[in-house]
Length: 71
Image 1 (cartoon, rainbow, N blue to C red):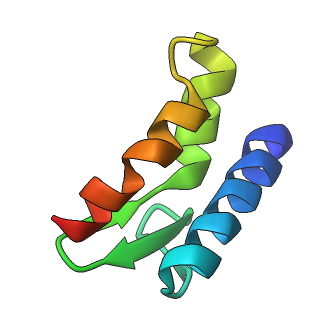
Image 2 (tube, rainbow, N blue to C red; image 1 turned 120 degrees about the vertical axis):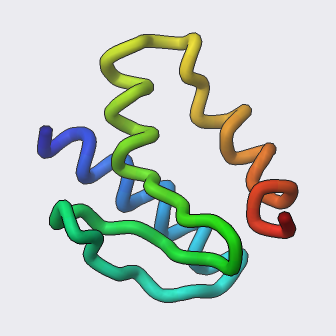
């Protein structure tokens, strides 16, 4: 779980620095990045990558963020 958190916070901080925003703690107690119309949960994404393997590619997810955040 600590690896998921470290990896997710790393990716999330890159996203936050590039697109702006502020971290917040969700109702479930996890860090997330809210944007108008969507919420990015990089720790969940890192967990999926670790559990599912290469099919949940972080690079492809990161490449899709401009569309996700803009919508």
